[in-house]
Length: 171
Length: 103
Image 1 (tube, each protein chain N blue to C red):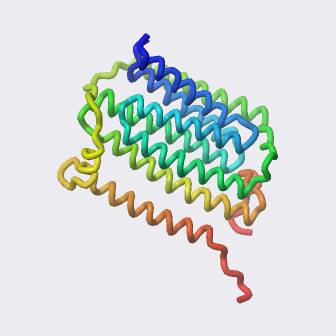
Image 2: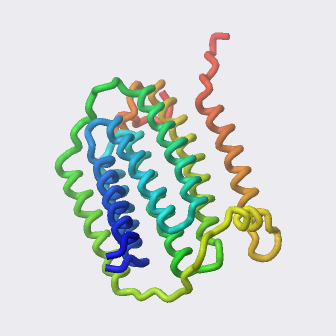
């Protein structure tokens, strides 16, 4: 068995194990830490597929941004050390069954399908990503780039407006 | 066993349904947000794997992934602002306790 296959299976075990612990752990802070390791595993999978730029973006945005933001909000809204309430037995049972059967359905479709396509060879250079992102000709990505930048601006203003304490009526 | 597209799709499908399970069982808003992040990550793995194994030489999957990551960051920021505002008004972030739009 080649070393690259072993690395893939180790990364998969990390992602799946930390994902399951993240959605079942009773302590919310531990749940966030398991989510962090799950994201690191996904970044490792991108490294394994030789998309280094995407892996770097994943680490910077998810591990460095979103998980830290989630941990901050946990500290703002929870008392440290208090456990989450146990979910109802019935809800756990039906959610588990629904997820399991949907997974089996999807897996049976994937297993029966044969994929035809051309595998990419070599590495993906960051220079090419940058050039495509500013390419305004046929097949370029400048329009979604601009749309996402407007969306980020709107989200930033929206966060400030939502988080701003409303002025009281007495003034 | 040689690792190919099928194994990666198995992994991402499993991660997606772990996220679905978390979203259905959890009632705390922050943990529901974490389950949504797991689902978005599964989708990103799919895009990257298809781009590598079936769409060689083109970059559409890579760009979809970059834009999904950017939108997920914006979504998480807005969601956490809303959650903190709800905590300020209701004193709890359990989805069952928050049952009115205005106090």
